[in-house]
Image (cartoon, rainbow over all chains, first blue to last red):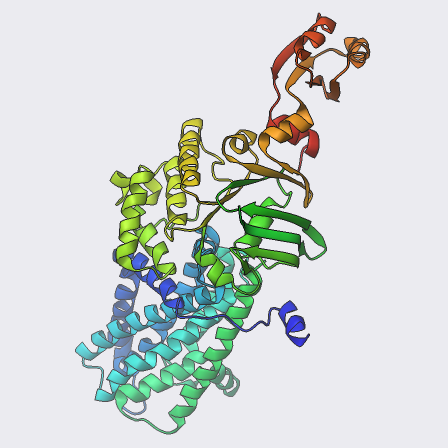
Length: 266
Length: 306
């Protein structure tokens, strides 16, 4: 009885299997076919940002601890550009596949479940974030902006914020009514996180209330952890940042699955 | 013959709207079974329940002996689905589309490649295998979607309006391929609103109207039962209409129906045309064989279904 009542509200247990990887593979195949146009944005934009803000603006900035400005923003960019990759993939990308190409419909006609599709999409969003992280890590290392060998740990670490941002984005996509309505999500949520998550200046520079808001932003915690890993100044408190991302990621993964199922299973 | 799809009192409701209202039918293994009906009759909804993508509200539905509620993955593993809308992957080549689809079934890549070669040859797409989807004609895209539906060598190929939007040549080619598949023993539930298609392909059909099955039978049976052998269409002006109807009413074995400016006379008797011809002089008259379209329109009404 309870199970039936719960089912009415779409609360059936998610039916996720390893076939989610087939969905991930499909996205990889398309990526490999289109890679020339897919890579250009994530390739160029971080370089331009590092150059403009790090070299250009950086000459005018004196940080309290004497750190060169470009060195300060590098680990932050390592967190927020991949955030863009994952969010764009599970925002515009997933919406386009779902509504315009009807790819999800084609897939769920096979033994792949809708939950597998959602999971595969999120894993793919996280993969895009990982690719972007790896690239930026190479760039900033070559630039000499990384102090600690612990920075290699950024790579496995990047899976977590990748899944988190992909899940948040897909949760929004699951209620988006048109592709242009995704603009709300990017304008109101992703762009402010990009500027306010402690990438370009220490959060302590913000007024008290804004610091509190910034603490709740998922990106802030990714920036904190990456900053610690690239500089080698790891502290126990960073476990808190990781835990926060785990909680937010798990929560939005469930939201994405339930909300997408609600939208697509009729 | 064994039943491969069986529905008992199947119901689908969306909120307060009942799309499928307690239908029962069974599809036998190896037959082509048509679901006919106007738009919105519940055909596609029925198909979506069979293919386990739309949950059943009430009633019983088994596919290949399995309950759609309990074993959707195992059912989908033995089904091929040809959807109404084109949902091929536009960024992938013809061959990649099939290969990616085969992976969803967890089939060994070598087996998939063999099947792709066979199927591309069967559907006359071999020389287009590396092309982009956008470069294919709509007929080729349809054939590719059918080929994709066959990648798992399904027992049952579910076709939802397989030839909508195709030109006559492309449509006949698709029909030819579907007849071949039927000869190979593939069970084919099919929805269509082309009566010619149903007459060409289906062993048995059901006509669905407003969520209910209103009749069932072979195409020939249904034509005989509901439209007789021949039909006379009389285009007649207002003033001649009354006297003509009076005269026709006097002839035995005729069913007369008035629709807008046309009078349809359904003739059952052998020499029916002669009997009617005697009564008609001035009007514009068309004599023809009765067909499924007559059955369909008589049963589902001639009003616009929207």
